[in-house]
Length: 196
Image (tube, rainbow, N blue to C red; front, side, top):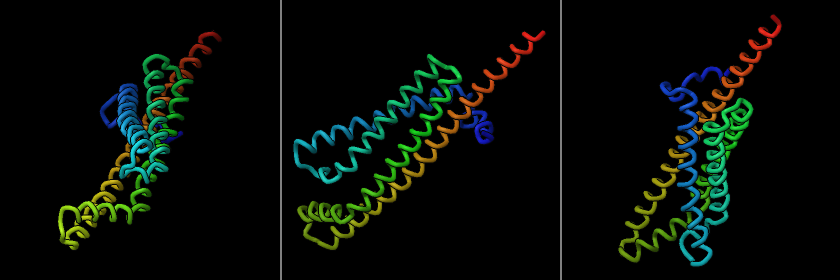
């Protein structure tokens, strides 16, 4: 519980309640942005053979995770704007940690996908470059650089999103804890005046 009380503001300058609204809105947009295109890729890969057909076993769970993030963020916006009670905020703080867990799992799945299908990436890359250029050494070098860039970008993006998601979950938990403490203090003050 001590870690929850250390966060007094969101991003050092925004009040906690406003920060929770902003975080929930960011998660909602992010979840929709990731869920909708992935759903279209899954649908199109079932009807037509394309380059994404071999990643369906990873794309389906990733899409489910982002769907959960979207639903959790929508629930959070509802809680913060309409039902801002200590009990509901404690539930949302638990949902926020589930969102953080889903983000961690989905990012690890993306990185493992890139690593597992390295040879397939190289095969498709060299075939597509060979159709344009006859220099084999050029295609191998270009594909190698493309793979390294893709893996590096995925790892960097994973680190940034995981750290920010965990921080966002901590901000939401801090707000829920402060809301609970405020309700407890107002209840204690009511009991003291009743005793008089």
